[in-house]
Length: 274
Image (cartoon, rainbow, N blue to C red; front, side, top):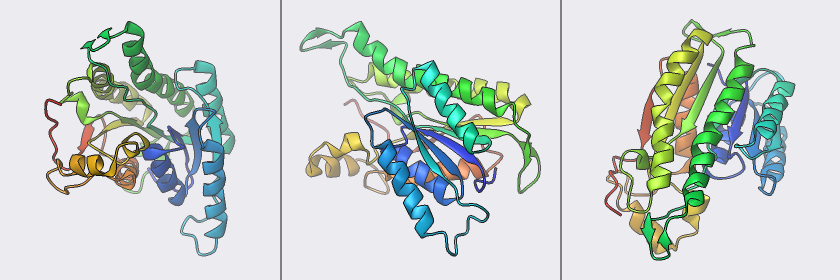
């Protein structure tokens, strides 16, 4: 799938991995719908991307009309709000790319200092990370199947590409991560059945499982703690950068043989007990 000239929808698009991915796709020539909570920086970030696009229009490699970035405020678990975001994408052109980055990583031991983990705390993580991801997938896929296929550079038609975000916690969940690990494990687990189902509709599905990355959540830790975590990565011995996630997402879009797979992006780290 050629990024240039497409429309992409990115959840969690106002910060972290989502913001970097939105910028990478926008710079590649796609119009981008930034889906994030109403109180996020989505509106400002869309304006920033549009301003950068105008400034770089001369000599741009995008070709044709410049892409646009729009903000669609939405809770990914809300059907009506996500549908509105999908409709916003349709107003820009044909939705071809979806990247699900919205999520939370609220920790909690089952038997913690304050007693048994409340069921609502577990359920909230599952609802946002898993149910929210699935909600976006189903509504976006419904829009994609109505579009005309496009030919890829190496031949063969495609309608769209859906990329989800799991985590290495899906495979090596640590103490205090039962909800997070369960939600991300489920995202990884549904990748293949979705890819198999959507194959007849010419839509690919893949998942990225990041390791320890520089994100807004990580930024809240002291610099020494961040450096210590980075040193746990075999090579390169540092935290992953959002642009590295974004570059992999872009490659998945452009490589038609990447389908039904969960790809670890972790510098060879294998998470310990805690």
